[in-house]
Image (cartoon, rainbow, N blue to C red; front, top):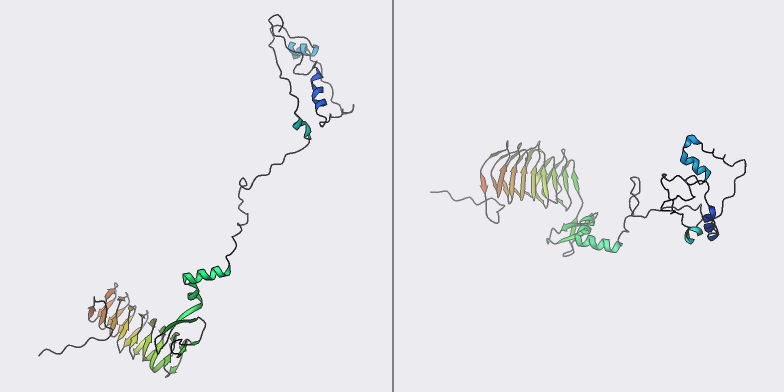
Amino acid sequence: MEKRRVVASAVTRSGVGMDNSWAAAPEAASPAVKKPEALPAAAAPPPEPAPTAADGFGAFLQSQNLPPPDDAPATFEAPVPAPTEAVAAAPVSAAVEFVPTASERRPQSNSPPPTPSPAPQTANSLQKMKEQGMYRNQYFKDAECFDCGHKFKTGRSAKSANCPACGAYISLEDVEINMTSTQPIKTRGNVLIRKRGRLSASSVQCRDLECHGIIEANVTCSGDATFRTTGSIIGEIHCQRFVVEKGADVAFLNAVHATDVEIQARLTGTIYSSGPVLIGGNGSINGDVTARSVSIEPGGELNGAMNIVRGKQIALSPPAVPPPVA
């Protein structure tokens, strides 16, 4: 301030007339920062041309290092602070590399799936399978003695077994008949009668029965009895689920006893069921039906008496014939 007027300093925008005494302090305080060597005369940039009157009166005054006129606006430049020790110690050419953390990384579509957790121990897996019942269902199957009725577990691939209670021999093999046979069948496996097969025996005891031929025997199944054949069947049928598939036309000369009955074709005979009886759209029954419930789909037929029993137990044998009225 001179005489209540603001006078610009000698430091100008173009740097002409600038006092370089301030730059000596950082150089002395920070020996780590090397002063760049002077360029050779051949590589030195050409000097800037001196401003002329055409460039403006202000530029001309700056070149002559003269103070600006009174009406010229004052310009101020903040002094450049000296670099600190930490900045001076760091090399000028050092580059800072940014490494993102795991949470900042964006997942890529082609990245491999996460590593699964280690599998549990074998002992723990087997114990869990045993608790859930999967172990028994996968490696064991049910068997029942024909003599004493004892039920036990045996290997799924076993062909025979001995009853743990009475020691009786039990066959577990599947039987397939493709010709005429007269041997009775007694096994806990499945029985398959082909279209050309014909079985004439006293009895057949098995787990599941599938018949495409002719049977002349009393059949006892612990599972399903499925028929898809044409002709007459001699002998009583005892099973859990009785099915007559489409395309069959079979006549049962003896009664059929089952827990669940499904008829999808033509059947002639008497049926006793402790559960429901379903007659499909292509099914028809020519005979009497005794069951807990009877369902007939559109197109199904029932030509005979229908007896609905609401009791807790249903007799699976023919009811007694009442005496004639005098």
